[in-house]
Amino acid sequence: MVTTGADELVAFLQGEAGEYLRGAVYYSPTDHEVLYLRDDLEDRYGDAELAELFAYYRDQNRKAAAVEPFDLGTDHCTVHFYDEAILFHFVQPGPSGTVITLEPEAGRDVVQFITRCLKQLHENSPQSIAAPEWLRD
Image: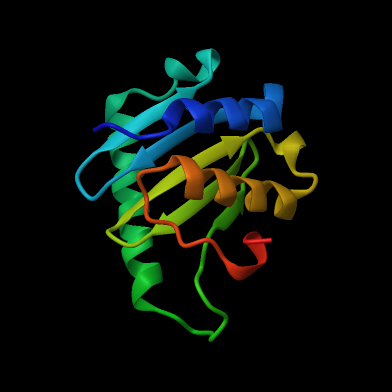
């Protein structure tokens, strides 16, 4: 799977998150591509673990698309805070998406981070991300 703009996205994430960046992975309906995985995590997450993880996120993406309990517009990103990581799941139709993980210490200014990521994904991703109105300024 070729992901257009992957180098730009990773450079952006490294500039924004620095040492707190853990990983970034793009997934499509049938595959996933590790865009970046910090050296100390490569041994921890093998191909089987990543395949299982992205089967889970594809399923989450389908479930999120099927249920819209609020009339608030598009769900651009879900954020999960775990003991060892903050996980940003940028969902898109298909189901495809991008998962970015950071160290928990990076939790400051989460909204600003999500906004900047959406802009980068809009500009440097194979996903068809429609920029929200508030991002077009």
